[in-house]
Image 1 (cartoon, rainbow, N blue to C red):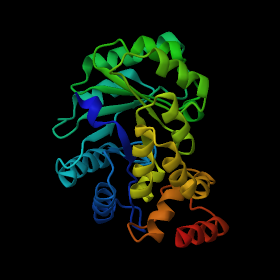
Image 2 (cartoon, rainbow, N blue to C red):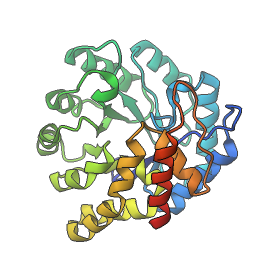
Image 3 (spheres, rainbow, N blue to C red):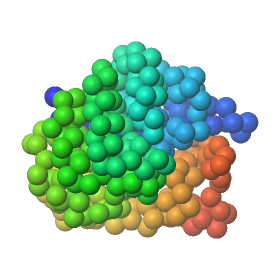
Image 4 (tube, helix red, strand yellow):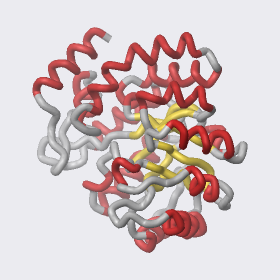
Length: 292
């Protein structure tokens, strides 16, 4: 089952841009190689960190095909297909070939704030149309609506829905899902700084932003946590703790893109309305990375 291959650390790939705003495919290749050589279990493309909402349809297709090619089967690839129009999400899925894609990460509908029943029917429709298994994504801070634990557990019984990226920040909600979910339902963290604690509750891993910049340390932390070696995992967690706070201090992916620039992986250009992090944060982040 694909769930076993997605246990551990997946990284949310950034989309590097050139100074003039074009997609930097050389930078993207470096990002993919850097992540895989760093030991991640899988990569996630066209998510929030990849600035998917700032990409047009052709750019998304180009990035998907490039990521599939450059990953070359070394690790599984999860692709972001989500939105607040059920019809459009299904149409986008039906128009892609999915060769080389192992699963779909689909964010809960944003902006129009559906009811829990609306969220359930949205995902059931997508799952029925998709040629690959679906991972739900709950991130209330971006969608303005929360998927309740009861909603996730109902969807966990739907054919072709195999997991959930849970980024509500609600530990009790995470525990209720972990306690009552089907055994083979993948439950991963969407919040880097609380991932270690959530592993203790029974989560299966994380889709990470920090792991994009520091894959060796972060993936080892997750592996130790999954083994129950929390003393060793804590050391690695606190090694990255301050940097993690800084990476998100002025929004994602501004922080992680600057970290990747300091690490000479890719440049840190963003597309509006996203904007560069402040000079003060850059200085503090660079100092922390140099010390690390």
